[in-house]
Image (cartoon, rainbow, N blue to C red; front, side, top):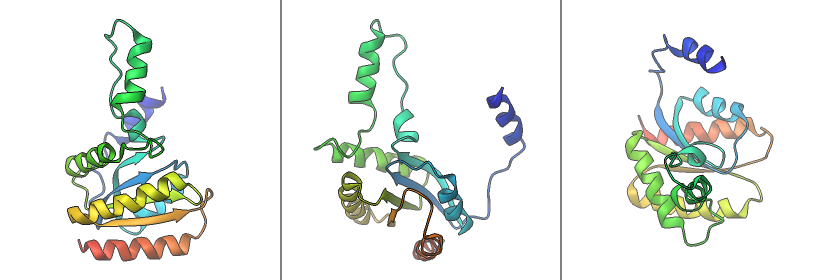
Length: 167
């Protein structure tokens, strides 16, 4: 029922045409929609994500035709989907996944967000900033609290980031 209502609501939607840049958000958990709203209110259009509980967790389908469904689930969670930064040595595979997403969604810039004190994502965003710089893709590192705070600083940093993209 909810899906039907959502599809009815968006069926006449033409999309957002007045954006300054197409963005991808990568990072840990982000369960505060207002965070994305602040980004989009500055002119960014979030077209995809690679978040712990976002697209990355659901990117591929589990093989429903497998003879062993438990093995198929394990294969998906361990080998098929992009891993969490806590998985040492898997950074090249994660970067390849993100580069594919940048191409597929025509991303103009990437925002790497991490919760303060999340050391796994601190290291990952540091490496991603370097990887994307090498690729010529603008990258903004944002540290954030669990609850939405520092909105003024977030607005300023996103505005400056969008200006560097120059679209």
